[in-house]
Image 1 (tube, helix red, strand yellow):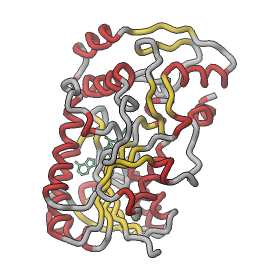
Image 2 (cartoon, helix red, strand yellow):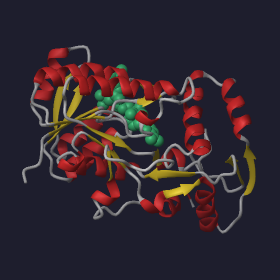
Image 3 (cartoon, helix red, strand yellow):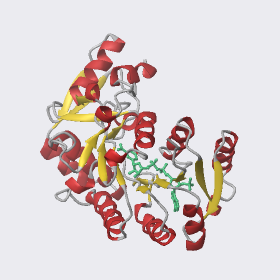
Image 4 (cartoon, protein in one colour):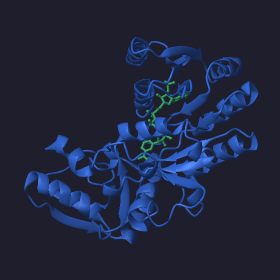
Length: 312
Ligand SMILES: NC(=O)c1ccc[n+]([C@@H]2O[C@H](COP(=O)([O-])OP(=O)(O)OC[C@H]3O[C@@H](n4cnc5c(N)ncnc54)[C@H](OP(=O)(O)O)[C@@H]3O)[C@@H](O)[C@H]2O)c1
């Protein structure tokens, strides 16, 4: 089967660069949006050049220039957007409405994967403020996509490994401690951890798969469905040492959120839903979705216990 031509928007980003590499690895003719606005950001320019060396086509365009987006979209079959969506870094999810307009006008796109890659926003109508803004914005984009009749796949990638496993699921930590850990509640609520290159791989695998057309792809690698305590135990086993444990109750966690700056409040709200409420695992996937490791059993995903080895 001929592989679709893919345009990656946000291709120099943390996840986007991995999607570009996965697309090239799977033999898709790969196009990467080169935004004029990156100017003299030498790191980004060099990354774009390295993609070019690997066979990617760079397409110049700008979110401030509708025509340029339409022209970029016209060159491909599938658009994957990985624009920023983490408040502590940058959050530009609603800019995608411009991309949706361009895709609608171009009229040739067989599938659009918007920048989601986290908790399924459709299940977060009850989320606490201000963290809910992340879900609300992603739902605004979904509505625009569906109103425009654009074929889509939404990727729910759960917890990025580097953010969550690295810090043993503690907000504000991305390297595991050898001394102590603070458990969120009793630390027994199950979450799901996915290594970022694996997310990119599953994302690219799905773009030509009719089984995920107009559905949500949930990435739930079975051995990575773990509680915080289980992640900590895996680390303790690797370093041959038991960490001292404290814990923070649900009530105290919620109270603490209030005193933080806005971006931290957003992030902490997400931790609350994942590690106290269990929002990643408290539902069964219905007809609206498919599970990635079942659809693509050939993918050898990174186990949390192996992921942690890099920190030893
Ligand atoms: N589940 C999780 O644990 C988790 C963790 C992190 C992120 N995520 C999700 O993953 C997705 C990607 O996040 P990320 O952290 O990879 O993003 P990122 O690295 O912060 O940014 C990605 C790209 O967004 C583009 N961008 C940023 N500001 C822009 C602007 N003003 N105009 C146009 N483009 C702009 C840039 O692309 P170019 O310069 O290349 O054009 C940038 O490289 C988001 O939806 C986020 O919510 C999930």
